[in-house]
Image (cartoon, rainbow, N blue to C red):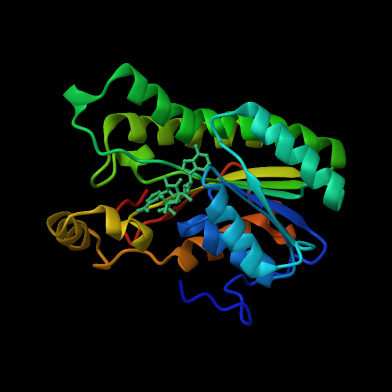
Length: 258
Ligand SMILES: NC(=O)c1ccc[n+]([C@@H]2O[C@H](COP(=O)([O-])OP(=O)(O)OC[C@H]3O[C@@H](n4cnc5c(N)ncnc54)[C@H](O)[C@@H]3O)[C@@H](O)[C@H]2O)c1
């Protein structure tokens, strides 16, 4: 992904901080994990795809002292609890959580089954609830924490190529970010959302026609780079981000302004 470990895109240092990234085995999550590590943090790289998490974590620190791979399915509350305990045992506590894992299915409305609807909601919205429930309480007890939820433009205006279940789940993730932000306000824990438009990590999943359509719709005529999403995560996860509470940060090349 052309990521430099010498010159982090983060404008902040995270020495002494422990962070967990979901879906860290590829895409935006991998970039976020790499940037946290380059900026001094200890990083738990978690993913449903255990091999992906291991590959990224080992490339960051083959010895495992500062980068830990964990199998974590965001649809399972117990996986969040296991990760919390594993990180607390190894590094003392979890300071930063980036709820990045997501899964989009482009299914015509009439073809969405109850099972598919539930799975997309569990992956993109219920995951945010249980992660914030588990880590919000852990961070509240520690008096410090940063939670960043990667949602989507689809959750604000339906997006460019999203289906009904994904768009509505991401809308729920935005609301959960506000809910937990308010519930944890004043405890040292802040919760925020990032709402990206099209990111280059999705290009392989789109047809040539869809790619052209999306690029023509975006006012800046391109997809975001994963590093541009990671840079915003760095701000929201920083100590200096403590007064940004319950925000939804739009990173969409001008597709949606409010
Ligand atoms: N790519 C885009 O255009 C775009 C736009 C807006 C929002 N987003 C959101 O940004 C985030 C990252 O997107 P990306 O393009 O890097 O996605 P990606 O598909 O490249 O990577 C997602 C990662 O999440 C993991 N994952 C999937 N289901 C999981 C589960 N149940 N438990 C744990 N891990 C799971 C995958 O294994 C993968 O490593 C997602 O939440 C996505 O919905 C993406």
